Image (cartoon, rainbow, N blue to C red):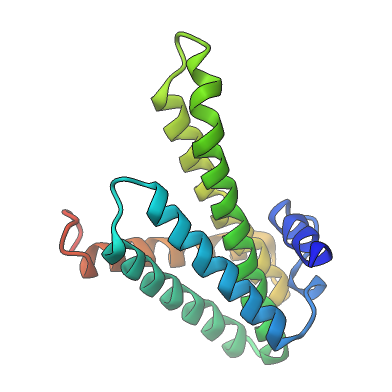
Amino acid sequence: MLALLETFFDIVRLRKGPDAIPYSWPVCFLALFLWLMAGLLMTMITPELDDADFLYGTFTGVVGLAAYAAIVVTSGHRPRLLQTLTAILGCGALISFIFIAGNALLPPLFSVVPFLGQNVVSVVATLILLWSIPVEGHIIARAIDRHWYLGIAVAMAVFLFQLYLYAAVNPNTSGAA
């Protein structure tokens, strides 16, 4: 288990690709479980979020996974699909847990310095979550044997589509829908 978490951490740091993940359904289900638990924990500790937000977020996450799966399959790399989805789920869970830890640890740290406050915490937390775009781009680029820039473009497109979809399905958001 520790070796798997270390591999996810190496992928998040862009040092390894999805090929470092074992081709295993149990590992994929473990990554899915971690991803769901991270989303649930994030929903529980964020006062602005409720159960519906968890469901909307899970739905848009699954749609994003489906988009990545379609890209891997249509590019002719079907044998890499399980490892790719496992890497995306596991790294997404890891990034979410880092976000949760940052939200818990940064406010006391930044409250010591007078000119730093909640705004800095929000910016750092947002940057942690946005790191998922280059990570997913890296995973996709390695999975389909393409340049990293193409992977980033794909990940950015999937991310924007997920934002639009989240706004479309969530009646509590205003804007794009």
